[in-house]
Length: 375
Image 1 (tube, rainbow, N blue to C red):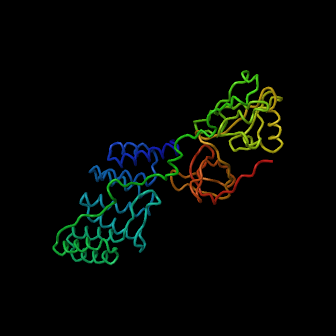
Image 2: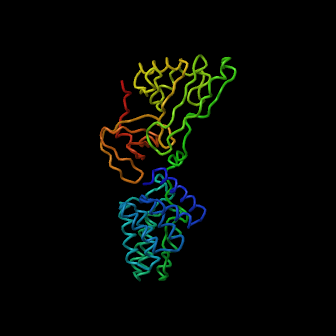
Image 3: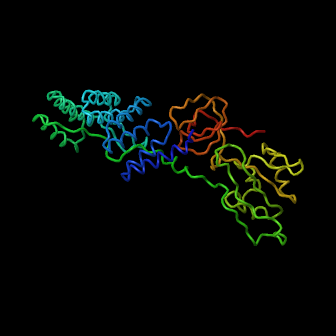
């Protein structure tokens, strides 16, 4: 099963292909998503319309509306596909269902969902008139245009007046649709986190602070994270010894002048190798363990830390689910009360992205509480 990152990457690259007019590339990328959400299926339909294949577009819009029966813009675009196939009764039904989803509102703005398009009630009424004109229902078409004129902003009134004149002359019209090249895009914040984050940074050695025998100690190495997306340690980082510890540590994880236990208290630090206990790994689960780890760091062997990451990304902190959350879309993370979730990204004030039981997805922040540090 493809990860959330793979889905977002193909979705984003597919939208970029649409923007540059590469329909084949866009379809290949969108179609590579094994269980596409409704918005991706909608995108496939839009690209098929642009490529001149309304039959394939119709199938894609059917799939989108099966997954999201409230997607008003999906009914609009399916109506356009039916119109191009000369299925005028089906097109009329789709445009009427679009109006029903508007629920007497003048518009639905899809910008926050990733589609730069505002669905206007007057445009849907215009499309109803278009189909009625094709069916020879000229009086009904004129009536629908009259309703559209009553809802249209001043700037677009002239276009409807012209259309009304054409209907009165019994000249057929063409439907309005989503602007060419506009499709649903994934959330910008999701796209920004597609690439792995090296939260430990690069190794840095300040020569002026090294003792005379510093050539005997190997320089620290950046943490190797588990790129398979497993929430378990992959490698260890050696902490140098002695009074030079603060000046020789990994830049970005601990810098000179920072509190002495800053790294050991950080979320990625999960445990350390106890030199006095046959090399067993000891969890960093309380203040006593932190102080003991710090004392061991001053020994001749230094200290080896276990750090955790998910898919090359740092774990910011953990939360515990308080309520059941059922996944609504492919990008969601289902939760059960008591689930501990590794938070990877704060999407916005209401949503978090996290990892739980091998799955990565987004979930509502209000369903969780911060996980208390173990005593």
